[in-house]
Image 1 (cartoon, helix red, strand yellow):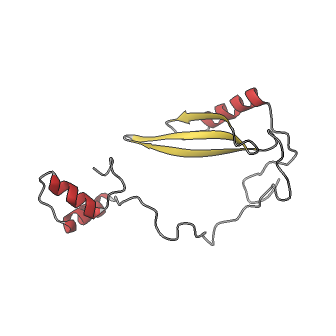
Image 2: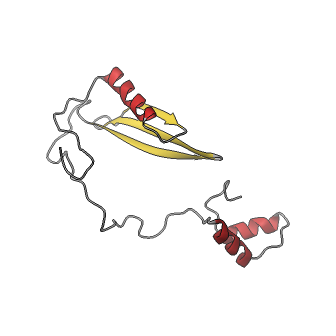
Image 3: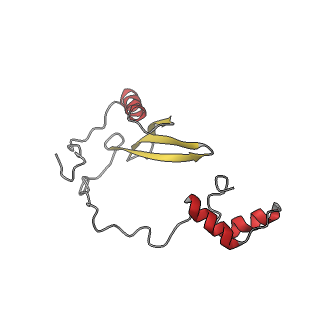
Length: 142
């Protein structure tokens, strides 16, 4: 039930189990959920408050107007929840047109599918035309 409805909390699971004929109370469902390490997935309060220990990276395009296609590209990786695991999605995006230049799916979180998506975008669209040096990912600009 939790896999099918991960947003159900102990109350809703109790109601659904009773509908199916199980004699359970909310205390038992709470105890079993805690024992299994599961809890309802829902937006919690203050989720957008930053952690004071996390480094804030500089915005590299401050003062730059993105005024034509292929000037700035970016990438994003996300996951898609499936019944028996996850699929990972990477997309290469043009900032001006907000067009997805290339995308790939993978069932493992490795670099191969990301590189494949980038190579496809470079093959089809050539390269972005900015002169901004790439970000090293270590808290400084290289």
